[in-house]
Length: 177
Image (cartoon, rainbow, N blue to C red; front, side, top):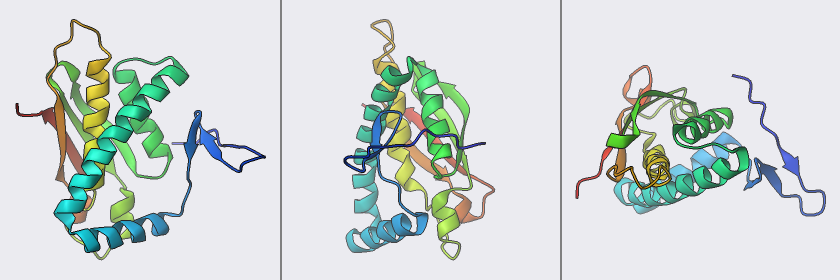
């Protein structure tokens, strides 16, 4: 995959943008070190919940902006989201299964940045991504029109390369009422 991302730098402000969204580009080790420090300070469960809510909101916002920027709709936006995440160094994301009407998807992640940056760590290391997929799925369903009555979604990491698997897996499913 060639990362042919358009990066525009405003000469007056120094703000970097890609696809008309303001971006911050930082080294992987910098981000991971900060991530681990916050996890240690707050505890994994508390931090995971905060990341889930923030990630959900951010993915929903991203999908809305990108749909308008590129004239995309439905699952094409979700697919574009995974493509852009892959191009930005988080890992290589693919949709193994998807059925938006049932708020269902299975996303596979190979070469996760969290696993690569922490080779000495074991366990589910990629939980930060979970809220992203629920937010993207709910955006798909919310914009599908009145005929779509799909349930709200939730997402969780069900397997991680940090546990010795070949790749990570995230399952999107209906959120219990």
